[in-house]
Length: 111
Image (tube, rainbow, N blue to C red):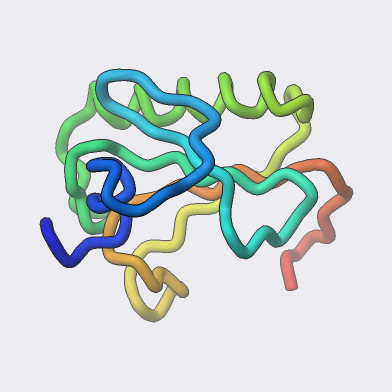
């Protein structure tokens, strides 16, 4: 999709700091980090929301990429994974993306 921010990043039309990539997934540093470690894991294929993801193998590859970037980034098994699904949930880019946050302690409930 020509007007999708993440599709344009995946296509190399917008620069980003890529920290992981494979045939199906790309992970980039968030430009507005909410934690010392904040990486976005996105599918290369355009999927608007998690609720639209019907490709089960792709879902598994996204989660495996989360594990890899967390370990590569030094946060290991101590990270928060956030997926905003839809406008009312705070999703402001309509391309599925998983926020991997770490490097600090997180409060519960989030606030």
